[in-house]
Image (tube, rainbow, N blue to C red; front, side, top):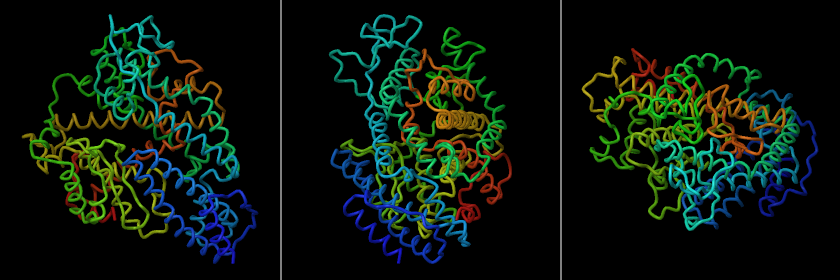
Length: 586
């Protein structure tokens, strides 16, 4: 009757919001029927809790009031309590003695991940630490760059800005202080993508790191300690090993090294080409002809994606017609973009979106401006409610993004009938890889020409046109730096989990230089915490999945193209209207 005890305890916890009286004693239970009953109860309770959390998070993401934020955190706290109760129950089973592989795998997924081994007090502390880290990041704002004299002002300078050139501090007090409200989404992101003023880019690069790093440096070190303690309780050497375990590859550390070793020669060629373009734009007094790349000049706050400097590094005007302009001319709207995405999936034999999707999704920015604009796909865990939130603009980027997010929805729909633990991808990279494989088809010149958005007289099917070459360059600028960045980030995180935080900022830039060939534009010291400028670092989120997903997406895309009986260069493949490709996806 242990399953009855589990349900009763769970009910008490969810009503009272307490787990302090719950005590777990390992019993080495290998009773298959009890394990099956536990997983059946877990499947129901976890799905119901997921639905409650998703609804609360949706309300906050579409209407970011303090009340909705408080309600969201209440539901997230209850979900954490359920997670720990389930962990205590799952770990009581001796899964090595359970023959059924599916039962053993589901128990393993509950037991291995998470931080519940810490115990109630330290687990609550870890959640509080993560909340502090996220709140600091989400609340970070910087002041606008103001020129005065020769690109500088007398409003204060950063102590880290070298070379005797003054850059206005984000901490100055003046009549303009009320306007110091530039946030990473989308103000600073847009500036880093579009500005070509080196002093301005340097100012915002430094300002963002001043706001996000040093204030939480000590808090992050406490997070490292607690995460490692939890990992040890879960049977791992440190938290880095625990994060790698989800890929089910004992040599995963070396696997990613081998993969990068195969790609590095191509990256070095791209790096050299980009450096030449940056020297033409900014001069050799900013970039050495044989030196690394300054991190602030790459069209992205973190230097992880270089496609926004395409017009700098490629001499001459673009050869590719303006697809975004053509979309506007043809009367595309956010709704039409998503209807076109739906038609792509139905053309390969997948299901159309349910009425609930069209009724509940937010496909353009609300007029009141209270919502968050980051694109995302949502599974409400009840097998019928799937939504997308995207502040869609009529542009090629958002056209591709709509297909990306709808791929996630298709995955949720296909796996809705599976046990709760199997509804996510087999590893953290698979979901993203699948969505990106679809965008390789949708964003290619062949597909855009087929649906009438690429009005070019040039035939793109042979793969040798300038349109194709520009597409491949844009793809390289998007994928290769991202892989190098994700590898550097995760290698740094694994290092500080294993070795500790001493010298962690120096190690950050050592790895950025080794894998990306990138250096900071100003002097950085031990007092800085530049890795904290990236949300995935301070929010305890896996990032190596993006490296793995980039490799997987091309493998998946290749298989889909073979099924579609494509002949010719891979980048000219379009699986649109291929039922055989759709059959593989199902």
